[in-house]
Image 1 (tube, rainbow, N blue to C red):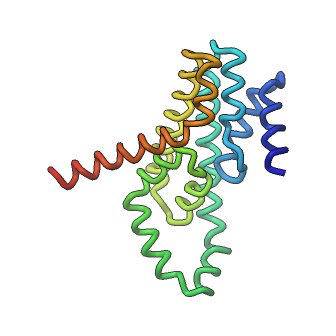
Image 2 (cartoon, rainbow, N blue to C red):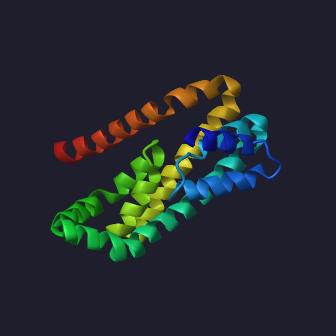
Length: 193
């Protein structure tokens, strides 16, 4: 089933209204959809490399809007469903401690998930559930998603089809390594200075 959904999403990249499909997939991927928008973004940029910036910006804007929807899901549905489950299993206090830790590092968590292949939808919903400051969430989302989609589109614009295979195989590990090094650098500076 997931493979079929992937194939249909990829086929949508060639549709005459593909930019709307890109926006839709980017939006719903941030809260419920399992397939990242890269599967449409990559072939769309390769088909018309001059539109790389517009496509990356559409992808970013729709993804952040979808992230805000995910945040709302966590904020409004957690109280009615999630909190009852935590109380039933006796985890309400542990979740409160998790929420404090999450909010302390929330900007970095959102940024990391928005930049890497980690399921961004998990973070958008968790951010709402833990009441992460909405402006922190929004800024971290714009920066991370914008950076991610702009880098992918710019590399495709610059190097064309030759970079596609590399991006599809190694984008996740490379962005994860970048994020680990970035966070590690900030932590090292915090404790060394």
